[in-house]
Image 1 (tube, rainbow, N blue to C red):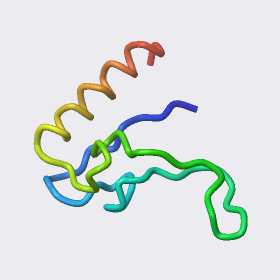
Image 2 (tube, one colour):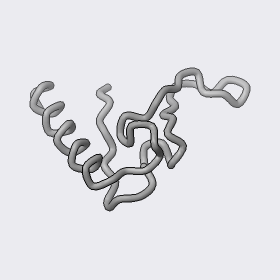
Image 3 (cartoon, rainbow, N blue to C red):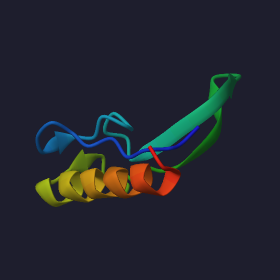
Image 4 (cartoon, rainbow, N blue to C red):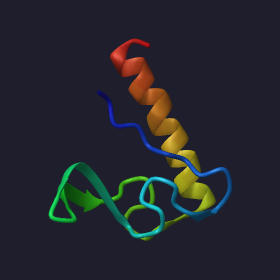
Length: 69
């Protein structure tokens, strides 16, 4: 599995972390996710600017070329 950035449609709330600034993944044990960390799609702010959206799109293009898809 590859972790791609999630660019928003327009500036505003980050769709990857739903505005929390924290990305969570893995199993949920006792209501807490097993893994979490700063969301890289919004750099932990919870909102994406136009610059963040362009950075995420460029990152995804680079990632696709790297893995050969």
